[in-house]
Image (cartoon, rainbow, N blue to C red; front, side):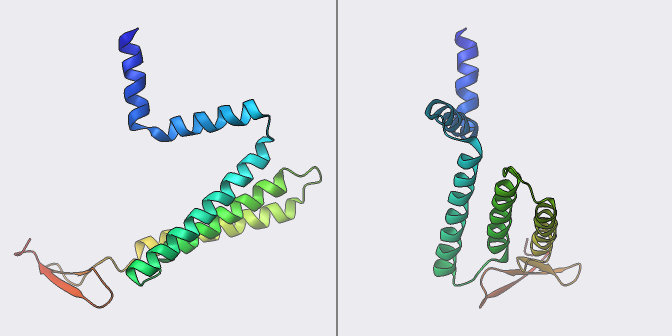
Length: 144
């Protein structure tokens, strides 16, 4: 029994997301909140957190990451899909259109990660690593 409790404690200490989700779920059940409304409010909270993170990152690093902007739009559109899907009279065209737009934003997100200016290979021997917009560092295989 002690070993099982130790394993559970170890699992929750490394996976705190599961513990947080469990606590939120129990609070939602105990308080009797509508589940759809709770999910929509949590997604709105995530959108606000992402906007604050994007603004903070912009102020600190003086650059705007396209990935953060795309993530905000994806989360906001998912929120709209949940709202539209939970209505009694569902507008399926609107839901499908929003899902299509989410799909397009996922493609943009993948492309923004793939073509990110983080590390660029010029040739087999030379790599340019962009640490800052104003600084570039040339690294060859001999220096690694």
